[in-house]
Length: 89
Image (cartoon, rainbow, N blue to C red):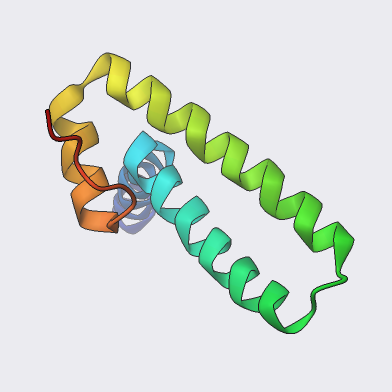
């Protein structure tokens, strides 16, 4: 019984990490990069283009949410994933 409870605790902690906004943006970014390289070879793969546009939209919405809720975590994530250049005034 002790092993099962320990495993469930680990899986719960992993699920929390997977559900975080940063982790979701990270996964979407990896998918976007993979699909972009695929589309460089297969230019007429329109279903993949549609999937890419959907994933980009999801990532944009998550990044907008993160920038509204926590600006510090947003800036860290942008710099780690090298998504955008910081705005200079």
